[in-house]
Image 1 (spheres, rainbow, N blue to C red):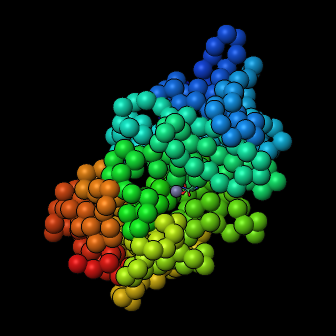
Image 2: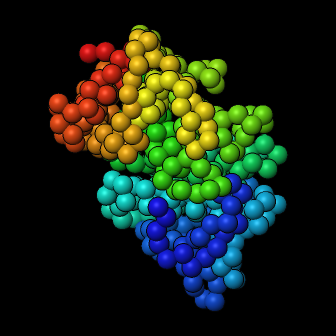
Length: 333
Ligand code: ASN
Ligand code: ZN
C-alpha cells in the first residue's frame, strides 16, 4: 500500500492520477519527499550530467498525463520511488536503499530520445530517458522499482554485474519490480509478471521481459545450462525470473489480474506455487543474508533453501516448493 501524507497530486503518464509527497518551501512546492528520506526528483531537461533543476510547482498539482508537460515524467518517477520505498519498508522492514532512512534521488529527461533508465552507485541516484521521440519516458512503476532495486542489491549481496551473478542481479531487480507493481494496487497499472509493459519500448505493445516464460522475448533463457554465464545479464536473468514465477504461482495456465500466463517446467513436472508474499520473503532474505558478490545459480538455490528453512522450516511446503521450482528451471543440487 501507498503510505505517506500525500499533500500533492500528480497526473502521471502511466499510473493515472496519483498522490504525491512533496515539500513546501518559500511559497512553492518541490518534488522532495519529506516522509521518505527526502528523496528528490530533478529535471535534467535533456542534459546528461549533474542534477539539472529540482521540480517546483506553485499549486502542488503536477503534470498533465502527457509527455509534452515536463512535470509528467517527474510525477511517474517520484511516485515510483515512493512506492518502492514503501514496499521495502512495509514488506521487508528496510528503510531506504541502504536501510538507513536516507533517500536517493531521481533524474528525468536524460538526453534526447534516450531509450533506457539506470541506477548508479556513484551518485546514489536513478536516471530516466524519455524514450523514442521523447514520447515514452522509461518511468513506469516497474522500471522505477527495477532501477531502485539495483541500489538495494548494491548494498546487500553486491552481486557482480556479469556472469551468473549478473543474471541474479538483474533478476532481483525484475522480481522486486513485479512485487512493487503488485503491491502498489494501482488500477491504472495492475500487477503483472512482465517488465516494462507500460513503456512500449518496442513500439508494438509487448513487454520488455516475461517472467512466466522468459524466452517469449526471443532472447531470455527459461532454464539454466552450462555457459549461461556468457550471455547478457538481462537474458541470463530469465532463469531466476522463471524460478520466482513458478515459486509464486506454480506451473501451467493461470489468469492473474486479467492477464493469462502459462509457465513451462524443464523437468515437465508440475510446480505448486506458494504465493507471491512468501516467495518475496524468501528472495529478500536470501539476497540480504545469504548471497554474496560471486553467488551463482547453484549458490542461489542453496541461499533460497536456507532462507525458506529460516522462515518456514525445513519440513515446510515452502521449502519443498523452492527445491521443485529450481529443478523446474534446471538448477539442481
Ligand atoms: N536499464 C538497464 C538496467 O537497469 C540499464 C543497464 O543495463 N544496467 O538493467
Ligand atoms: Zn537492471
